[in-house]
Amino acid sequence: MAKGDPRVEKSALAKVKSIIFYAFRGFDPQLGFIFLGLAGISFIVFLSAGQGTPVAIVDQIRNLFIAFVIMCIVSQIPPKWLEMAAVWVYGIGIALLIAVAIFGLIKKGARRWINLGITIQPSEIMKIAVPLMLAWYFQKREGIRSTLDYLVAGLILALPVFLIARQPDLGTALLVLAAGLYVIILAGLPWRWIVPIIAAGGIAILMLIVFSSSICAPDVSWPLIREYQKNRVCTLLDPSNDPLGRGFHTIQAMIAVGSGGFFGKGWREGTQSHLEFIPEKHTDFVFAVFAEEFGFLGNLVLILLFFALIKRGLTISMGAPTLFTRLLGGAISLIFFTYAFVNIGMVTGLLPVVGVPLPLLSYGGTALVTLGFGAGILMSIHRHRRLVQS
Image (cartoon, rainbow, N blue to C red):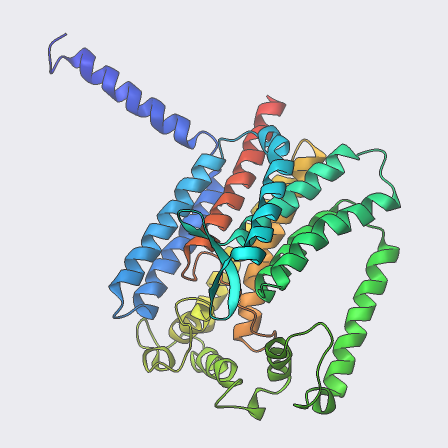
């Protein structure tokens, strides 16, 4: 057939259509559009937060694109394959965390990275590896579960949390802990265990608030807690104690959020961010930039998008065909909630500053890849459910 022959053009077009169909056959439109909506907001905010730093803007666009590609690729992987790989992924993650503890790279006083040709942060792997492993374990114990199984699950969770917390990386340790606890609770952890833990936590918080002046004294040390972690909690209770030091981040972020009013100051018109009062405005405190420029109305739209993302994930999980996919999908959906809740909470002064990024908005490649991987798993679960039903 000669070049330009209509049959050749039709054949080439058919191949392109086939490739596109294969790439998006596991794509869930609702989840995908929410993901793209948040990515669009991220780009708009980053053009303001990253004003004067074009390299960071280009990097963020690249990171968002990589996360989207990973989401599409993972959506093609059958959940059964994920189940078979769970133990291997968890084991490799633990091995890497041990390697980090022995000869990891130290940056800003923390040993969190390892050089394997490229520099990676193994703790990020555990945000997916831990719920994978726990969902696999409870799937294997379905129908014969006992109290001992929950204790074993607790040990599976405690090991990576301990290794990450001692790096130290409290923010990531809390996210991994939350991801694992979601699986354990969704697997049917008895309420007689949950209620006392919640009650003990509530009493501890109340005691901390009541006796904050004495507990937060400079000469008082907290067991198992590093000094900077103690300072973060005490700063949360009263940031005005050190307004130009430890309390500066929280105070300036709260000023930015409050000054946005109902409609905001306008895109790229935020004074707190552009006069450099907001620290880490590309990463942990990007919500403060968004709130100042788009106000309560913009915050409402953003929170509704997060709500839609979480709701869609939970809907997919509830319709999943196996215990493994239900537990994994539910945990991943609630991980998105934890990211958003903790980040917005720390920016608005409701939670301590622990270095948790805002999903899809904060700058950073590793966190975006993790979230893209998680969204891809949800799409895979949805596609698998449809195939089973048909």
